[in-house]
Length: 128
Image 1 (cartoon, rainbow, N blue to C red):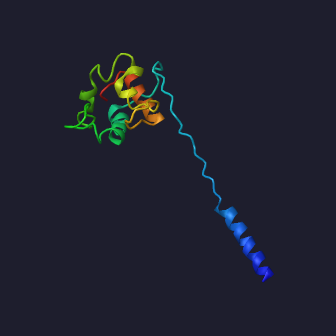
Image 2: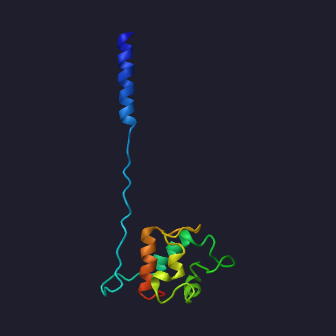
Image 3: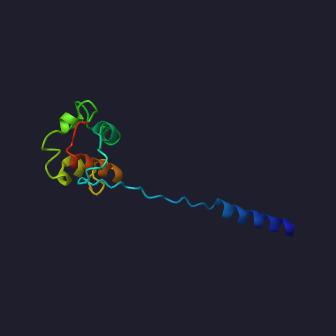
């Protein structure tokens, strides 16, 4: 009986140590996009920005719903106004409203998505 208690205790201790697992959270690696670097990779509206809008915005911002219409077919024409994109990229509504630092209830960009949206605006907000 005594050996059964020892065996049971050893099994419990082993289960405790085996059951303890810590998953390290790897921080998101945020790219750096320098708007003054002529060799910087050009951000593509269709390849880089539209997927962000589709994952974060299109549930509400689509044809017949909330403005601007950020569906793939209409996003560029809807954004191409001084209301959403202005001469100071950091103050553009399409960047500031869903920015991760904003505290309102809108869905937020991830840090990487915010860098891409800001970089796209800084590169001239082209329809590419």
